[in-house]
Image (cartoon, rainbow, N blue to C red; front, side):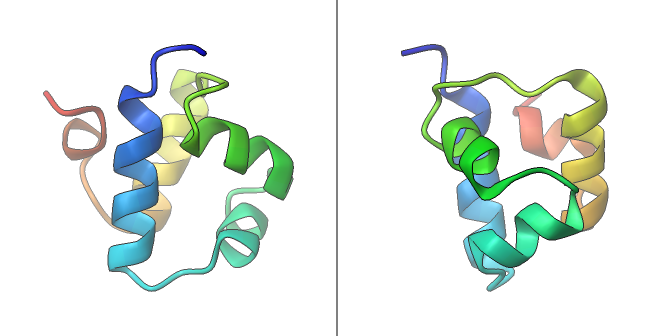
Length: 67
């Protein structure tokens, strides 16, 4: 398993915003399989995708990556 530092935060923010995984995957234009793998820490998202996720969650990228 890869580093899940992003996955746990993505899932937490998504749930905080009460967005279902299927809906969120559509919003960021990835499959639910890919989003699930990211949230479980099995796949690391690209920098562009991280920014897209942060934008969709209406948070700063630094909040998402924990810096």
